[in-house]
Amino acid sequence: MSQIYIEYNFTISPLQPASEILIAQLGAVNFESFVETETGVKAYVQKEELDKEAVKNIQVLNSNEFKIEFTVTEIPQVNWNSEWEKNFQPIEVNDVCALRAPFHKPFNVKYEIIIEPKMSFGTGHHETTFMMLQFILENDYKDKTVMDMGCGTAVLAILTEMRGASKIDAVDIDEWCFENSVENVERNHCSNISVYQGVASFLEGKKYDVLIANINRNILLQDMEIYSEAIKENGELYVSGFYKEDLPLITETCNKFGLTFVENRERNNWIAAKFIK
Image (tube, rainbow, N blue to C red):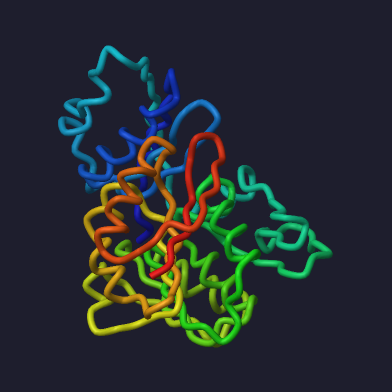
């Protein structure tokens, strides 16, 4: 029997930082997937996992700093493909990389990635994913080993293979992301990517030339020591999922564990940054 999902469609003013706070707080009460929109956030939870009382008590929804309104809709899982077909538009990065769904027309670019995003984060539309794709396009991955931590749709892992990476591990804590990543790796005929469901402890005892982590500020700060241990000497760390005002704290934490700031990108106040060990 198909799982039934509940969609909460939030309209938020001002949009930030309320959207980021709301996503984090909804994630703590069983919401498993989110789509950021021009006016707010769409959040999804399995019907059997929905705790209406917990939602009602979410701190940011009761804050006087933001105006947040929402509607609630019940959505059968069988409708996801049609929902994405209506909402997911192809994008192009640096004129050499395109992300599209199977139902879009092909692009005439060097790197074309085909993904079926379903409920996973990482379609390239969000600023953080877009900037991480730019970093991958502009740095050397040939014959390197790569870890994509919090892989979402595995789009970053897929591009690193297209850019010449020899061995890539992609890890996500979310089962839906894990399954979606496996599908997208197969869809793009990648042979060097292994997908796992797990957390930062997966990295123990492993070493990579490059570690990519597009997650969020709190997880990055919490797991930075583990990330550093998993990066070879002179290896690279690429991180995103945080705001401009968080960069000094991210940099300070990286420095503490032997990682030196190289450069960063900014897009609508979101940051992606590169560090060297």
